[in-house]
Image (cartoon, rainbow, N blue to C red; front, side):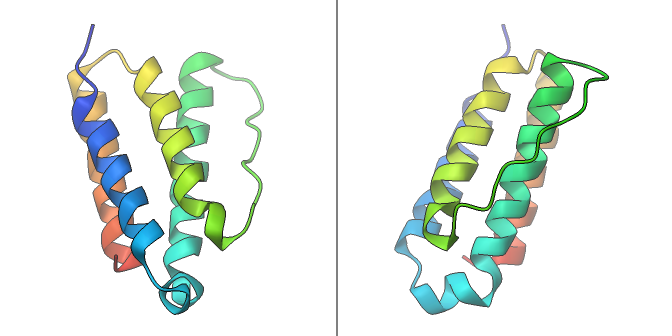
Length: 103
């Protein structure tokens, strides 16, 4: 079993930063970046769980739900990863999205 703690920590840190961000920062793109990350992580999890199936897109639940959406998608993916390299890749994706979000 692979240790996915680095992924869950990265996701929780990003989510905490989003929750602490002012509404103006969320409106300027941080929430949109988070939704994009949540959708990417969810697609990744779906591909691991059901290869070749048509992925379902995570809905836009609004800027105040973005932190929860990345938390759910990140934790779902963490449950499915089986390789340390995959975990490292996922952490890089989360950190890059957080950097683009500016939080």
